[in-house]
Image (cartoon, rainbow, N blue to C red; front, side):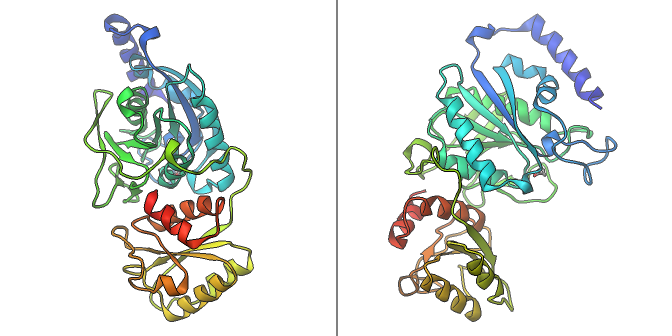
Length: 355
Ligand code: SIN
């Protein structure tokens, strides 16, 4: 199964032994936390790039397959979960954030790489961006092709991610997502293609930098507060407030909103058409939900741009919150964390302009 990877690995290991310029004790210590995804996936044949099974290969095998990593960092691995990322839950996030914070307190950990399915990588990245309490680098990585595929992108992505996590240049930039030789910021990054290796994009705002020869090269930094500069602390939480997303479209009905409210949601994010516009039955249902104490955030399904406060709806009058330029899935994360601190919509709006 790992024939190709192993052969490449042996050649690289031989080169490493002959030409190594770094002493192991000078290299940064990078911990790899594995959570599953396609990077750990296997297919029936080397050409199976759809219809494979995610989350099959354990962290030790992932590390063995990329011996080149030893030239850029001392690497250790830990299997935190083994799941396809569509099954990521709030509970997984709490567990992961706590483990990351625990490890980053250790003086012998310089950075963390998290291997992850690409489907929800952007959500986990943003959750950690708001809840990690350290400036040390945290880099999330995945792959679009399973480990068994011709031209699998996992090994080079993992090598690059370890290089980025081990670099002092990556510190204090928030949680990073590194794939396809690019480095993206957790707040802006989104999966833009169902199948292409260059699927990760930060619409309109762009990537933060590149990875060249296993080292990060940065060109810009996020302007929004993150990690140690946020007010969110999940260390004592074992549950997050229930928040769901309702999608806007022509002929939209109020049914999902009523169902979420009846199910006990304390927050709803509406992924509206255009600049967060609301169909009349949807607006009526959201207004009623707000009357019952549910916090409503208006966002947009368009994929880029700002959902402006008091634009397509009178947020002041409705007592809604505008999502700024956060995607609905990231607005859900910020709203959950905001609700761990307050139910005051003015305060929550401030948080949407801060993070
Ligand atoms: C997943 O998100 O776990 C599957 C898809 C992928 O990793 O590309």
